[in-house]
Length: 360
Image (cartoon, rainbow, N blue to C red):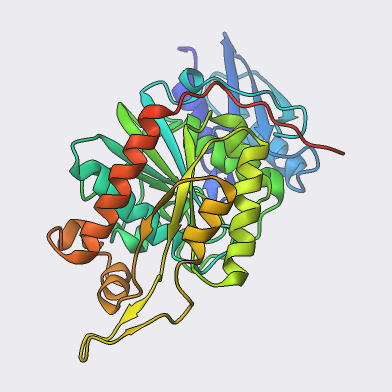
């Protein structure tokens, strides 16, 4: 009888599905170090937390399924955990994203300021200038890229444990929204979020990119620290609306990136003003100029303003971003001007791997 193959072992383990990720443990990269010696098979299952509630069930199912393969006489399963905590070390860019020249975070101190829409149109404007651009949806709890780019379907698996990214309007795209059902609530523990982000960085065939735009989750928590640890971000763009409440949170975002040694490339004022399409009257619904003044006060560049306009909202909801579908319109022009300033900032910014400083 011929010896069982590694492919057969992995196929036997694929029916084992993580209930939180809703994907099988092979595609999630949990199965490591498969060794086959005649009829003896050994491997590790590396989970995202040592206290995983399904740990024992995974071990039992793995042992039974591989043990049922023809020719297998013994199965050794080692259970482990891999978390990204305080002791995690910075990782050089070439180790995580070897084909990516610049990694750019688009962030906000709070939700609801149009960060994701800004990230998408900024990425498209950078691509329109001739750059090869990818975009990663790091907002695990509220992924927006499938909707904003009108992309449906699931990524293909390459070689059993890597994913082929999706594409839309010339961008290379990855989002947790492609991997779970749209209505599925993301009730995940911190280590699981960090593991998902790490996998979307390390286990996706990103290829060669001039810029990767990372649509960060709002706020200043674990996900932002994980991204700063895992990838030496070339810089961050902060998105805010003009009113004081949003600016307070934007201030925190700027302070966080400075704390982890990520250059702040500038601030974008989104929903800057509203101009009535019928009468042409301009209304500063959220105030105006607050982001510019805050940028000046904090000593960071002001990258530009984008109006509150029905066309931008309608196009975004329909998966037809304005930079791609109305490239000659005034709104696309605003994003392209912001992209040009970001390009200038990227050229002038040099950055080594970050040193994360977290006080207990």
